[in-house]
Length: 330
Image (cartoon, rainbow, N blue to C red; front, top):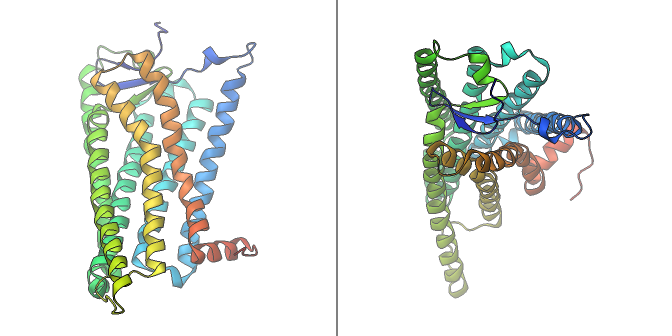
């Protein structure tokens, strides 16, 4: 068996990453392997518990039932799914037999839900930005444009498109596996490697860049409008009813911007590493060095948002404190 580890392209044109940590064994006791396992479980639990708290807080407090908070709750569900996938992969790779880890069923399960969680996160981040844009530029018609009913339809659309995107990727993945299954020893090809479907590698960088440009355009227009109104306010006592610049509205804009900036910072290295590897721009050893820190950083982002809501939003902080029966520190 060939034990040359690292990212590689197998005969299915599927990108594979080594997750063998045996080279980090200290004194043969696999210390770092166990540390990695424990940290992975703790990170997954942090993501699950934090986003469960966000979802429960939204459900329990009618004051939070706004369109913007609805999209935040949907983003929390997507992040919760990320935590579930992470925990599932860690437990499977650690405790389950190689036959299961290398099975098509296992690969399909975790890849399908991982792609759905990422795609839906991107979709709801865009909707959070669009919601802020409409609140600033179309404030008088906001409730007719962004009604609760429309937000539910948009949410269903985002989840449906995410599932369809994932199904397309996994169908292509299955076709390639089926085409070469006679030539491959699945367990040998799969052993201690992470399978990344090729469409994911080819498309994630492009999609990530498009989403980044959309966010950049939206917030550039928002902050230009805010600055323009603030300059007008200094020279006039008249109100500007079409584009309110209240402190609360500005705080919501800044909170949304913080969430999006953190998402970009955390996910950009992962998207770049996948794109570089898929197009073969770096050696597999170099990409392997980039991949795992980038992957961990991307996953950690799913646990950051609950912390941001608790710090930035008085309503969420009060709701979370009530659920946890904690005294609110203002």
